[in-house]
Image (tube, rainbow, N blue to C red; front, side, top):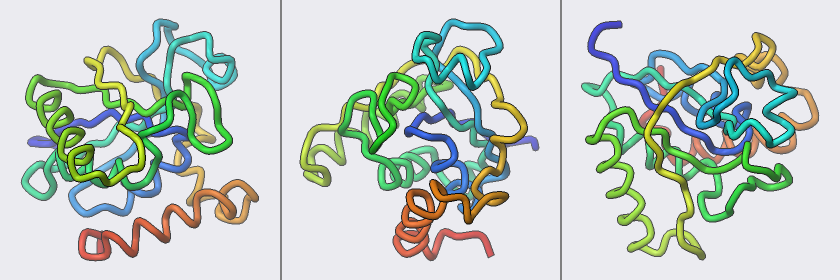
Length: 179
């Protein structure tokens, strides 16, 4: 996987974000997990309490020759609500915050530029409140969280919440989907 870059993003429930990036051309892998907190090796149960400081996040390995970090962020901002603090729909708490954990000063600059661009265009009814924080550590989530939507598409949460997000994404980014 030489030449790949890493993006670490929190956009609410990782079950909702992972399948979007799994189907995006230029993305090599997506792992659900936790980032932004202080607890070592957190478990899902610990993160759910909101006391670990971690956000549910995805670690995306991508080929910058096929897709830029800024384009990854543009997709990210269309598949979650970056204007609500510590909340995504019915999921409430700091573990569901909108966050970009940047891996380099270039990623930080790109994140700030994309946020300015989207706020300036008035895309959202409120300002973007996405946290832009230096990456420290990513902890993969338990195995049953990996590829959750792909493995459980008929589970009620998946059918009611994730499927509409995937449909919106596929319509908006049809030209960027993997073959």
